[in-house]
Length: 53
Image (cartoon, rainbow, N blue to C red; front, side):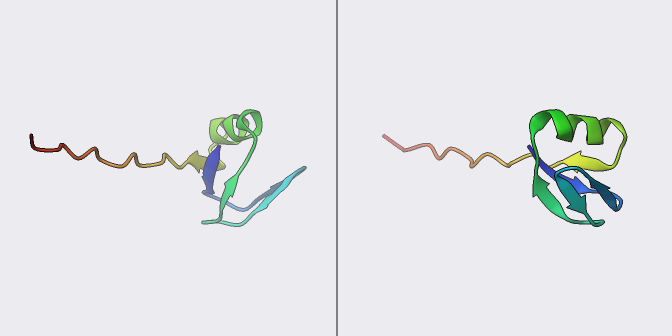
């Protein structure tokens, strides 16, 4: 899961400074989100273009 650090946080498997982005395991990312250390970065889906017939 892609996340962005809201504060400096260090732990087993990660060392994030404020503003850093990282790809973390979903379970770890969800715990960090719960404690508001990071926020999830939601990928923007490309807009579908309609083809004129």
